[in-house]
Structure formats: C-alpha cells, structure tokens
Image (cartoon, rainbow, N blue to C red; front, side):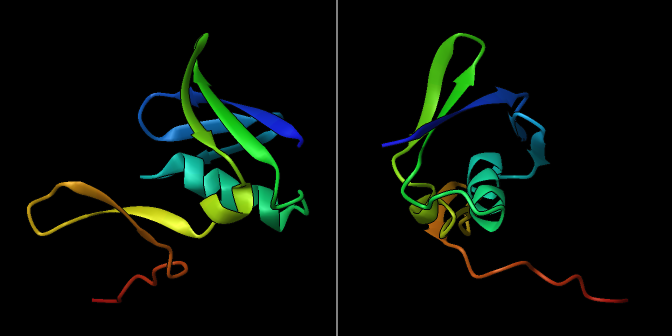
Length: 90
C-alpha cells in the first residue's frame, strides 16, 4: 500500500510536497485535495508534527469523506463531509 507523508503546522495547516491546505480540519481537507488530484484513494496518509507521528488516515478516500464539526456544546466531533459550505450574503 502506498504511503504519503504530510507535515502539520500549527493547528490548521497540513502540507504534502507542493500541496498545502489551511482549514479547521486540515488532514481531511488534504485527503480531499489529494483525491481530487488523482491520487489513489487507497493511499495511506501519515501526518507528522516535527518527528512525531500525530495522525494516520488508512485510506485517503475514506478521510476525504470526513470532517470535524463542533457539537452544540462546542466539542469537536467527526462527521460525514457534506461538501463545501456556501457563505450567505447579508
């Protein structure tokens, strides 16, 4: 199984080679970006903060289908990704 190595910066940035994303859930956003770029959805993504393995996604295709949303108490929860959110005009 192929493996992609990513680096995490701060709380909201994930980078792989020339790709970088900044998001509330940067690892899952990176999964979506990699799948959209044509990377095999079965590819494993290992995310490091410095030299420490911080997060693993066994298949980026599955990671692309997830997001993190706060529940009614403000606690972050894994959820199914429903696509980009549209901003409402005032």
